[in-house]
Length: 161
Image 1 (spheres, rainbow, N blue to C red):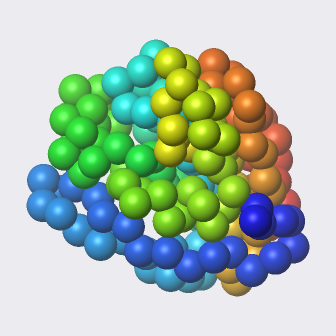
Image 2: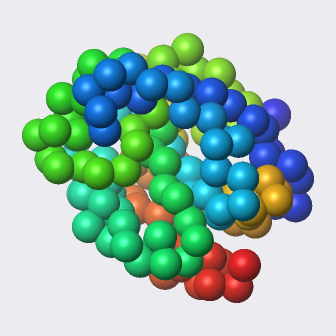
């Protein structure tokens, strides 16, 4: 069941490796008192996903100035995410939801066979804003993996928090 705007965001802890080279647990709760932008994306090393994460990394300071942290989440392994992050200078935490627990909780998974080549267990490109109190303030789940989230709207919502 998908989450809705106004609901408490499901808490999670996922593994990340791209920032330090060591596997590290990162929890949504680590950012209490800050707004969080969760960017779910289908797969590392694909064109649109690389454009999305590189654009956000380049604009990191903008989000930071809005008291926001940005987290990228996919079903890729921590090792894949580390290599992709290094190759593309992605400076935001890339979190591995390899077991699809968080994608399921947020309702972002394609239906079986719904992604390219009939792949199962892949997240749709999605964006959520969680405010500093843990409430979902923005939700966008895209069916077209080639589309990007509405970053202007994301920035507008962050400015209002």
